[in-house]
Image 1 (cartoon, one colour):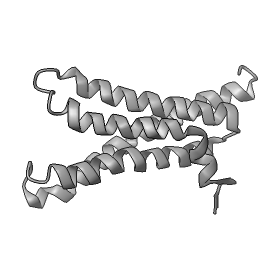
Image 2: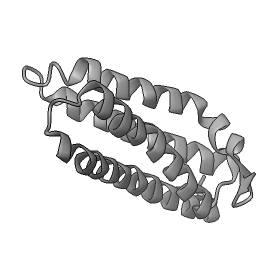
Image 3: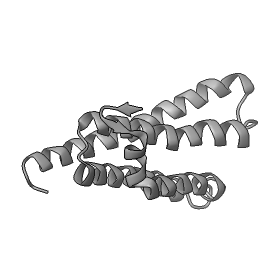
Length: 141
């Protein structure tokens, strides 16, 4: 199946290590940074900056080396959103921390966190993608 002329393999294979590192950052965020956030509050910000950097580097690579246009960048952003914040919101929040908030608030909080985090991923992907697509068209890369 192709999405805007690219297969899922073309979206993920060139940035497979970026995907792997982003998943490891999410795991680190919940198993290391969150428990230590009282003593070291900067760790949560650091992990968020790390996955934002990973998304930016992945988009840069896809645009620069694999001829991605803006439609492809948006799809890549959606894929990263699902991977990063789907993993964060639905797996870790739903299964590891279900008792930290009242049961009736769980779906709303999960959706809110997923949408907020995904909007950050999409903003990063779109901004970096637009800059690099423009630079590529102007032959600056």
